[in-house]
Each structure stands twice: as C-alpha cells, then as structure tokens.
Length: 294
Image (cartoon, rainbow, N blue to C red; front, side):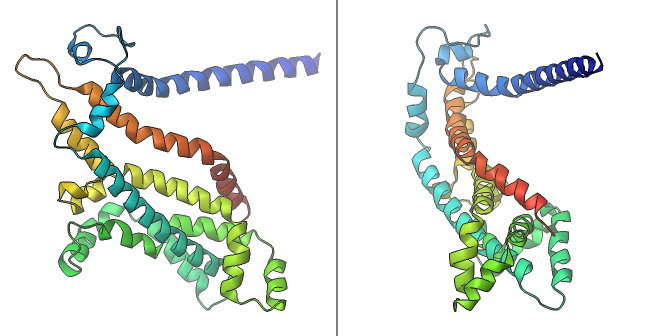
C-alpha cells in the first residue's frame, strides 16, 4: 500500500510538472506562432481592425521576397556583413579561449591562480561600465570608427566565461595522454592542436553556438560603431526595415507589418536550425565542464 501511495504521488507530481511546463512552453510559443502567421498575411489583413490569427484566403509567401527586394534596404548585403562579422568573431573566440583555457588548465606558473581569479572577476563588471572608454579607444585612438574592427578584434583577446568553460573541460582530460605524446616526441603546441583540441570538440561547439547566437542578435555594438548603411548587420537592417515599413499612412492604416515579421523570421530561423542541430554538443559541453572541474 505504501508503495502504491508513493507511486501515485509520483505520477501526480509528474503530471503537474508536465502541465506547468506545457503551459509555459505555450506562453513562449504564442508570439512566435503569431509572427509566423502575420508574415503570411496580406497588407489589407494587417490594417484590418478585426484580429485574426490565421491568414484569410491565400498565404502570401511573397512577403519573404519583399524583405530582400525592399527598395532602399540591401538585406542580402546585411546578411553577408553579418556572416563576415560572425566568422571573424568565431575565429578569434576559438583561438583565444582555447589557448588561454589550456594554459590555465595545464601550465604551472607563479600566480596562475591569482590571474585566473582576476580574469573571472571581470565577469562581475557590466559591459556598459567600460562602454565609453572602449568606444573612445577604438574611435579616437585606433580610428576604427565605421568599420568592422571594433566588432571583431576584441574577441581575439578572449572572454572570461568561455575561458573558464574551456579550462574546466581541459582539466577533465587525463594527463596520461599528454605524457604519452611527450614521450613520443610531440611538443606542447602539437599536443594542443592534434590531441587536446579534438577531445574538447563539444565545448568548442557549445562556445561557437552560444557566440553565434549572441553575435547574430547583437544590435547595440554595431549601432554605436557603424554609420555607413552598406556596413549594417542584420540586426541593424531589421531596425532599418522597421523604420521603412511600419507607420501610419495617410489613410490611417498601419504599414507593412507582414514584411517586418517576415524579416524577423529570417533572423530567427537560422538560430533555431543551428540550436537544434548542435543542442547535443551544447548540453554535453556545458554539463561536462560544470562537473569535471577539480
């Protein structure tokens, strides 16, 4: 009887948990579903006072082509700019964070732990605190204003969170691998490139995916450094698209909200695809690095 009561309580607890999670998931999915259906509506439906979820009549897939053919907005160029910036960010992040993380995990040096703690303490400092001096450094001293350099170069100097993530993963690897490679005549750099890096692939993939998502959605950094519209990223381009499609015209109706929602989906879909493809690596990388530290 006692076992049956425990079993029934567990079933009720699981049922309640799944119901709450399902409601929460539905709440988060409603705006996304509304965005999808709004992107497929006609302009007349958008300006109508009657609120509908599903499009009436035909679904207007041409709204997506309007995103890329909208006059005055070079969306394909924004996409190429974004890909270029993200590629530079990923290269810098992988090189710097793996090297520094490996150094903190494997090398012995006086004051290494103090430097590591000092590096971690930078995570407590909000980025907006250093915004003004960083902006002055890049624009007034280096003269990097209106270029992609302020968006890319800082990532070649690492980031505390990802350095910590890589260090934890490297510390979870057995030392015997490096000792065997050293006996075979391999140097430190060769051991790092050919032995250690392939073994921390889950952590690197997790770092790349999280970095990609942050850089893909970054609006503020390009906003303060880029002035030339031909250098805009997708986040700025979407804002530019909003300014050109949303508003109240002479007849009192709202502008092309359907085109803006199509542009928003163009921003969202690549992130969803990458996340679902790489979610196994993200979970493995974060979980292992969180448990393997010593």
